[in-house]
Length: 335
Image 1: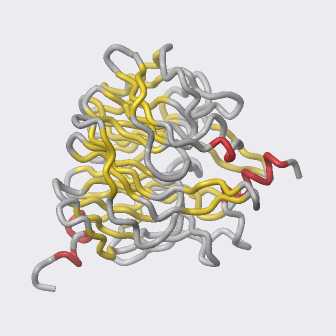
Image 2: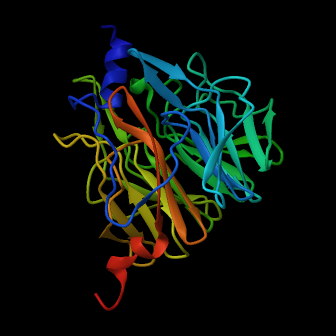
């Protein structure tokens, strides 16, 4: 096994003997499955639809880099398949833009993706020729105003030794890129970002340990203020995890769930609500299945959980939803 494959195996977390079958958990409602198993895709809400672009899956021991595009109708609760992307795309940074979604960075599986993809009007998906100048794979990030923020990551999905602390902003209006203060702490990748006001909050991820050639998960959490152009520390997460998912529930609360841990449990369904005001984590209803690199999307009163990686070299096509109020149940004053 080559060193690059060994590094990718460490990232994938091949520590389980089988692929757990997603099943109902608590108040989650099972919906129509994604047309194909998938993880590490671009995902966002566009005009009453959830759009899933690109991603990866496995077949016969081979990793597939996807250029497929699927749309989930939030009223009919059914999937349709749109025209594919010109090339595969996986591990991008995705941001909400003007009621649509913007994806940039990531990789085609053969090279870093140098363009950007904008979906503002359904079903129109526009590929921009100009994207980020820095190869940016496995980054955390999000959209603050017109700026798509990138933090950490590396230049290739198999170059985990290339994790970095660098941060930069790509302006979706001018399509120019400028550096930001590096993220404090170790070089990292496979973290998750979620936007709250003028800040990008970054949770978890992993660093590369050269002595063992393994990734070591992090509990670190930080926030970057675009207005102040500076980082601040948040309370560390209750568990060290990479590849978790996050979604903003309201003006005060975030839902963080899933990912892969460096322990016998491996892939996890554990979830927490983070309170932006009190800088506090509260245990929350878990995801409906254990997985990393999945999608969480809020639409109205529902949070949708989409696909992901439930075990090394496996993907799921499962889709569930839950009422937002159920995720906040532990915070109710009468409990």
